[in-house]
Length: 454
Image (spheres, rainbow, N blue to C red):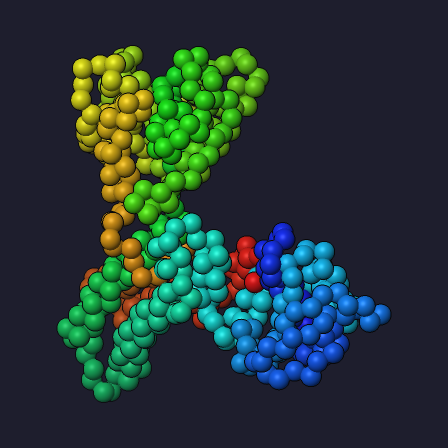
């Protein structure tokens, strides 16, 4: 399939002033010539007519030819830029397929660029991140990643790990050289320095991931606790219907907002309680499904009718306790303080944060916003230099764990061979980020999320 010539519409679906059909592969020039009747000059814009096999003019526009390997995909590439009519663009694609091309798969243009060493895997992902950016800073970070900022930082880390690994393995393989690396402060010093750099890299990547992917907040609690009012207060608009009647919210409501540039995905859910109502039961089932996938739960309780210790989060859940499949951080929202004599505040009970506020009046909402930024490690004005994904964070964490494990082996048992193996595993984990170490399943998962034309 890598030898096929592929074709796709490269502009978004719908009508527009300009529509682009892109071809890439060994027959791209032949097909482009057949449709336009032009003899192409590389990287020159040619005004021409696009015709079908019967000589009928389909459209007029501009055609460009980019010979490989000096193209985005590394292959011969032709772009046909006409008017943005979905009907005309589809006809041009069909004509290209009749002439020997095939419809491109999702992300196949970017995948070919990666396979032809035009970009690495992190840069390929940055293309999708740039297209899907929801904030200005996220777009700027994705652009930096596309230019290779993130990749160069990863390559620098790999070089440091490789340098140390070479030193360790040389000492193991050539003992006659009397390199006593086990007692050398050089190894430990290099390990400490690399681990520190990993910490800085992870912090920067976490910021980039926050700005790109955001945080999923699920608002949960018993009926009439003020969950929908909290959603409205966070979104700044009347997104949810609010009434004094219990069970008003029956389905899941979603909003995407920003707090100082940090994107948030907020989910309002049905009130959690025992119910004989079949429709309400389905709403509650969906609520638990959203709770299971949350990054953080905002557990809303009604302070005006509270009769349990606010620090006991377990008792805040509905009568039938639901065991979560994973440990999800919870912030308790002590709502409706406008009905009591208590002022808004934020309090820490052991590992649980409690925010007292009034979603109705807005008192205390700023405390909640500051708490959300703090608990996700977000810092205004410290946006990071590149975009990152969760898989990048997991790979960095795994690589750092191999370093820590190797350091422990060296300190406790002087096991140079085990340290060398941990350094190799660390290299592999870092290589997964840029695609230096990859597998077909990972590539399929990444590029399948792209749009067809990329």
